[in-house]
Length: 82
Image (cartoon, rainbow, N blue to C red; front, side, top):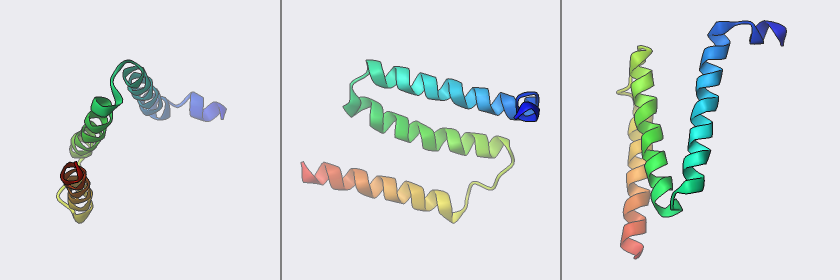
């Protein structure tokens, strides 16, 4: 455990992740859920794509297409049920 907490390559992403989680929970506590949940889900996909691109990952694969297609079909199903 000591080596993990002294390793900056581990600590920087860990603290960034914890700050993001804290911001997420603070935003959820102060925002209407019908607005906050769709926005946070959409932003999660966008930030994942941006960070993946910065890290040099190939973002044009089948996984992201499946994720976006699934998200769109769920949203359209909810809209047509109203």
